[in-house]
Image 1 (cartoon, rainbow, N blue to C red):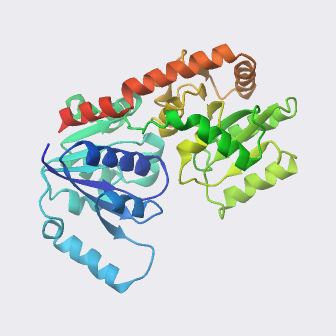
Image 2 (cartoon, rainbow, N blue to C red):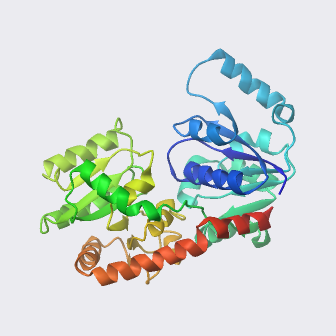
Length: 367
């Protein structure tokens, strides 16, 4: 596998797609002879993490530095001379049509798709999508749900789509250490039952549904704690939820925590994961919670979660039924055997699909 590969990330934020790409590049650097370089379209908090493992170029910065603007013009005019030739380009989103001027210069282009219809429609144009379709030799998909959306809504030929599962580093051996340490830091009793959620504070991620469940259950059960990890502390949404927590006197039992540099270690203190998303093509947090051997409660028909969890790794709830979610959480709290059985099943699936060996094997076959 002595090939030159350019990975393109649309941004360097601490969100699903940039994190999973960082995981994949680390895996390949440690277990292959690939020569890897990275292009990040928009600078962010993960930029330095990328720079630690591969030569990394930033296309767009938020600053107004004149030298950076000149550099970007140079990249655009002399792309191949600046980057050199690559055997393969892997674009880590279907929304990179706005840099088609770069992508089309390369013969072999894989587009790794992490988006569903709602997000695709919101952040890219039909013209940009057509450019990506024209210059992509293979689409990589993490789930059947994403694959079906590519076929049905974007008219991608089936033979141009291949499965590439997400890679999640295995930190399970450190779970108990992290669990004790983080609960102590947060001031949560060792034997409290914690329901965890993660993601940006937005309707698509169902943060409002997570809050409603917490509000309902905390009224009747003082042994439950809810933690939502993610979001910008300076945002309007953050202030809105903090105010709601205070107004409903939930401060002791509902913790709203900002984006973490180590979200998987934070997950170790959870007893279960409540995936409250209204739409999620294939949630990275789902694979991470499975690695940590957690049962999952989720909403059905929202994306790829059904094909991973189904009915043997947690409880699926129809039509965003809050009351049913509450019942399932109580079942998991009160029945350790059910909780352990679901968690064990999810970890087995993680090992089969999202751990080091299967992802490496599939990636090598693809290239």
